[in-house]
Length: 198
Image (cartoon, rainbow, N blue to C red; front, top):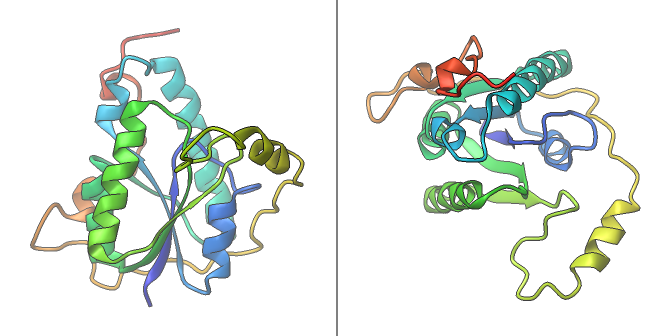
């Protein structure tokens, strides 16, 4: 059965996470994913301190998702390469993610991944995170949208997730294999080329 992938970016939690709830409600196996993108960590606004906080959050998220039945897949590499490898291995029916508040690099990355997903015929469902409203023609109305979202009660965590199961194995002859992208042990800041930043 094709999978519902949840793409975690800055939103490393199981509570108040609309993409995770939507994937759980899809009736499909859920594939939670985080991609460590070296190019992101080479941006001028990236630091070792930021990675330290994010790394700790990833470890906590791994535990929380494993307790729900669907362990977090952490990959290391380019986002489009990662999604292509995941699609070959698991078969993706849909991808859920929050609209991200980031820099120009993350916005361009989201557009590249979205274009690849469209070409592959995989729906990319971006859920509002409250502060970001994408595809507005004008900023008029942004505050009304934000105030409406700000008044909503936090969403609960899913009760359980149907675990992902590879349909085509983790290796594939064409392209980079998923096994090459998998990241069992999370890197430290030095591995990402980030200078010491206590």
